[in-house]
Length: 324
Image (tube, rainbow, N blue to C red; front, side):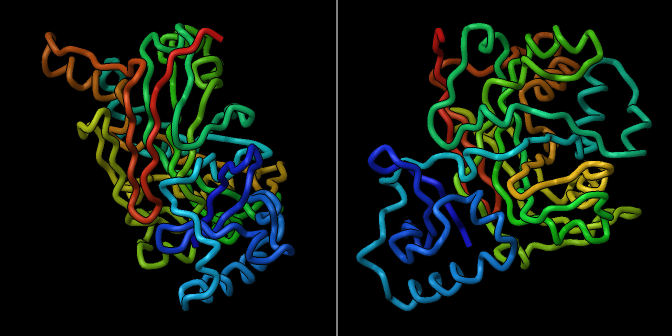
C-alpha cells in the first residue's frame, strides 16, 4: 500500500493512495487511525483493515471519496517521528568521497555500520524546503531511502530485523556543506549542517509493495535488499543514479547496530545514507579530480530537486531562501 499525510482545511489527514487518488482514512472508516504514527503503533496487523479497503476501492467502491493526488497538499508521510537516524551504508559513496579528499578507504567501514542522529523536529515533505543564508553556502541534496520501524524492539538480531520494518520512503537529506565541514573539524559528526531540513515522501510504502524487487544481500551480509533504481535531477538535469541494492550494509544489519542496548519504537526513522553519485559534494569532488577547471555546482534558491526511486514514487522539493 501507499499511504500519505496531507493537509486539508488546516488539518493533517491520513490517506490511502489508490490509482492516483487519495482516500481519507477516517472517511472510509472512523475507526481507522488518523495518523501514520498511530497506524505504525498497531504493527503489521494494523494494516489489515486498510488492505481490505484498498481491495474494495479497486473494485469500484468509495469512488466519491477520492481526491486527486496532484490537487492535495502533501506533507511528509510521517511528520512527527519519535527519532531520526541516518546511516552510511553505500561503500561507493564513502570510498569516492574519501578519494576526492586524497584519503584511503577507511577500514572501519567494513567492521560495523555507523549512523548519526538528525533533527526529528525538522521533517519536511514534498514542496518547499526553507534555508537561511548560511545554509545556502554550498547547499546540497543527498539521495537516500529511509525505513520506518513499526515494532518495539531492543537488541534485535539482523536475522530478525526485517520484521521490524513497516515501510519505506524517499529521503532527501538536505545538507549545508560549509556549516557541516566547519563543525566536523572537531570530530563530532554532522549537526548544524543537517538539522534544519530533511525531506521525505511522497508516500509511505509498505513492504508488501516491494516483494517483487527483493534481492539477496552482498556476500557476507544478512537481510533483505531491494532492486530499486534511484535517481536525482536538479532543474530537470539528471545528476545522480544508483540502486538501493548497492547498499553494503543492509537495513537489517543497521537495525542490529542501532538497537544494541537501545529500544526502537514504532515511527523511528532510519536512513540508508547516500547512494553512490547521490550528492553534489561527491560529484564536485570527482569532477575536480579529473579536471582542475571543473565548475562546482551547488543548490541555489529556486532550484527544483526531483528524486525518484522505483516503487517509492517521486519526491520533488523547491529550495527557498528565508531570513528566519
